[in-house]
Amino acid sequence: MSLRIVEEEMDPEIKELIEKGFDKTKVLKVSLPKPGAVVQRNVDALLTGFKYVVKPMRLTIDYPYKAVEYPEGYRGMFRVDDNKCVGCSLCDVVCPADAIRLVLKDKKKVPVINWGRCIFCYFCVDICPVEAFETTKYHDAVFTRFEDMLTTLEEFTKRPEDYVPMRKIGKKYKVVIDEYRGLRYEPVG
Amino acid sequence: MVYIGPLEIPGRLIYDFLHIFILPGFGAILVLVILIIWAERKIAGLVQLRYGPLHVSRRIGGALQLIADLIRYSLQEFIVPENVDKIAYLMAPALALLFAVIPIAFMPTAPGIAPPIYVEPNLLLILAVISLAPIFVIVTGVASDNKFAFIGSLREAFLMISYEIPFIISILSTAFIYGTLDLYKIVEAQSKAFLGVLLNPFAALVAYIAILRITGRFPFEISEAESELVMGPYTEYSGLMYGVAMGIGYIKLYVYSLLFSIVFLGGWLPISSTGNIVFDYILGNIILLTKASILMLIAVFLRSVYPRYRIDQAVRLGWSLILILSGAAVAWSLIIHLII
Image (cartoon, rainbow over all chains, first blue to last red; front, side):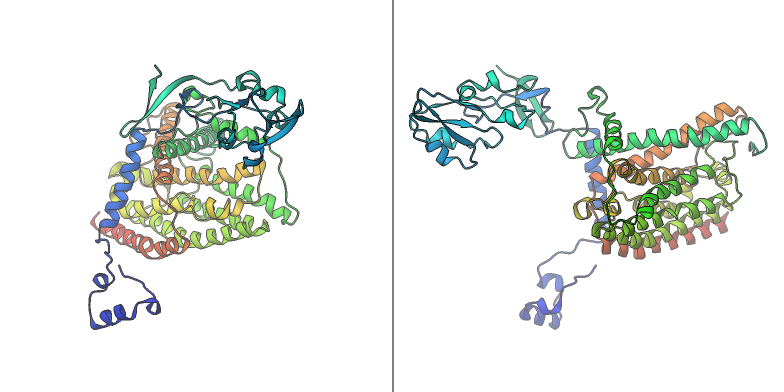
């Protein structure tokens, strides 16, 4: 094995040391692999790969057959309470994805959402001065048409379970990551 | 030797049909290639702590995923780009496939039964035919009028020259040991002594590494490098032709694995000719295909372990270590020949 370094790119002091006869690897503070280490490394890599083939360890959740119970404060879909809303339009201003649009209702500007654009950042929920948004953990929506993702005010005041097309998902579990065996599913409650 | 000669009609004709269309031929190719691609994706999934294909036919681990893919490819629109050289573009993958499959007709795969086309030095003939396939890969790249395809085909050309020569040298070096270039006699010679792997480990090592390169498996999947060249020489293909182009590598892997298991692993060896043709045909083929499948599984397993070599590293490896090792294989064969 040899170190291939362009001569011009070398520090002049280091160059001088090497010209004096010092060991190149010690001057440059690098270590070269021992002869035979190549074989050892290849065998190690193959054995590690083979270990996982024989003893699988999976870190992918088996969604949608098993679903995760989301923690408190999970940012899922939400609805607006149009009676609480004061029509300040702050949610429309703060929305980074331009997902919120305002519609007129009784001379008051009330938000409706485009689920295709929403990134679930919850800026609107946080900024609302009267807490007019009610949040849920619901997230497993499947829309088959773009038009369905645009909500009307009538829809957006309902809870998402009541108008969003649902995805059929399995039982909910608490998922624990086990360092040696992969994911472990623990029943909720 | 109990060859069924070419004149023994009607048994001969039935056997030829079975050889080409069922057991070592197209039927086995279709089933094994589908299973091997599934296994490749599944093994890569396991090593990367994922599931791999699962949703289609969940009960048997997603094994039917590839059939679903095949149906999708055949129903997809096949677009011929405007600026391609149309005849070469359409013909090249088909011809590459043809020249990858033809060698099966020369291979004896069961004890006591001659292959459909029996020529005395059939090892030479197989090597000659099988090394024609890369030319059509290069033709696809040039005909596609696409820079990725062109770069891919250039890489293929570089690598082919640097790995096919050691492959042919190492395979032919075994002729010193066996004293013949006929695959049937090679298996017979192995039944009298040891398996070819033990007789000449250098040749087996070089041949296997070269097979990995020739069939485009990792760590030598350089001409079709997905992350650099989209699909290499086959970038412009779509629909069913893409499916064919993707399958060529696996079909080549199958044919080369058959060749490797005949030359180095003793073919159908634990059994020898019993006189019962049906029994010999079925059992001999199954043993040979099992050996070939294990080789193919190892080859696809390497995808999940190795990264891809850079082109200059692979070419340097081919012209230095692999060529030297193939020279060592010839020397080793000569020594064994002198001892025996």
